[in-house]
Length: 168
Image (tube, rainbow, N blue to C red; front, side, top):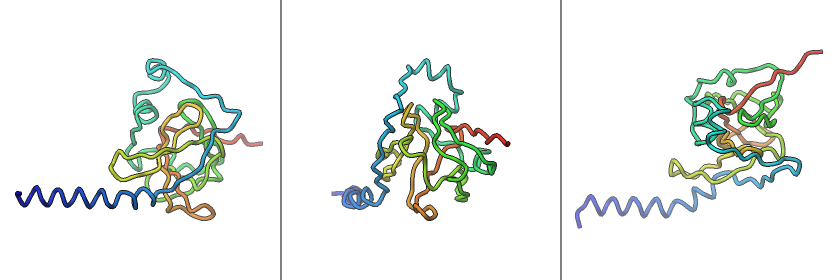
């Protein structure tokens, strides 16, 4: 057997052996849709009509915007962060913090408004989260956030719509 093939097989075997450890290292959250949320199902054509091309790529195809590209990363006003696909409230400004990653980040979320699933797109298991109403991809959750949760809900800015609090 050629050395290159042998080393390749060893590498694949090593990755396969490490996979259970990697999968168990990601945050596993037991989230459920709030009972008052009706799932929203639209055709691809309806989504394309409703969303810009950039938002469609993120919300419907699981894309990721470049870091530091969203003005929402530095947004500091009081207000709400809503799903750009269906307007469901996902986060409030009290839940936001500056993670330094270049994406809007939150240490918690509105209970029952997000769901999670395993994401293996980059071959490293991650916990993806999406809107509980429309299923729109929002981002990934990591265990390197601040107290009290220790979580970082790392969100695509284009997947959100910010609604400033009304004064008065």
